[in-house]
Length: 303
Image (cartoon, rainbow, N blue to C red):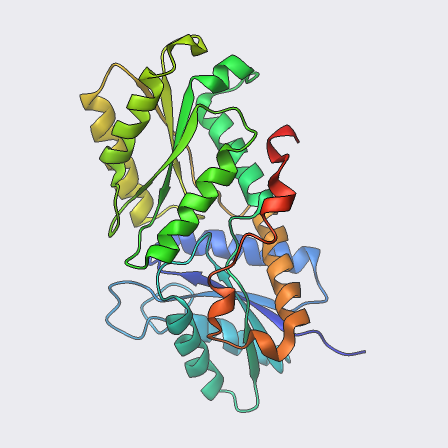
């Protein structure tokens, strides 16, 4: 029986222990569901690191995860970037981190898959986070019609990466009944969070017939909590304090739920099927088109 390639879950840019524990939980869950596939996880591209971004000093270094898979008998690893959207030129840091790790293990092959989103399953999970933020109870059409969502991405210098957040916002809005879904970014890109909230307030004021005062849910387009999430919360809380005329709610990050695990495995199987064409550093995987999302999402809000 041929051993399948190992799965390397490549988290990006955190030095937060809570984020590291969430990645461990994701690895444990996938290991239990798919015992036939060796799986490990680590981080690359950690901002502000003095050492190599996948080296000592960062939680769960990517190189250690590769070494673990090799010790378990892996001869080929498929890296799936744990990203909801590209974060600028991510392909190069991930490719570089993989190359460093592979050089320590002669003969080890490697392939790089695509980032996770926007994917219909993740959009459904995001919708659940929005409902959780609004509180328990049934969500009626009128209730949704007075709610505007601010989807907040990390922000990047690459406009294509930022455009993926805008695409996710459009897919989240379609068919779900919200007054609108606006976008903002924590850093490096406009609009920032206060400007995004200003736009949401304008939208809410333009829909007085929706039944009740307007309200905004600030939704982080991140997988895990950490420094960016804390900065987002501070920005949203500061704006809300200055604008008591509108209700502002905060949704939590997606976390390592079952939907994330399913999409990770989908990206893994896609990369295995693509074979050598999905080599590490291939930019095709880092800027996905809408081919898998648009048809499947047409009725996502009705499920």
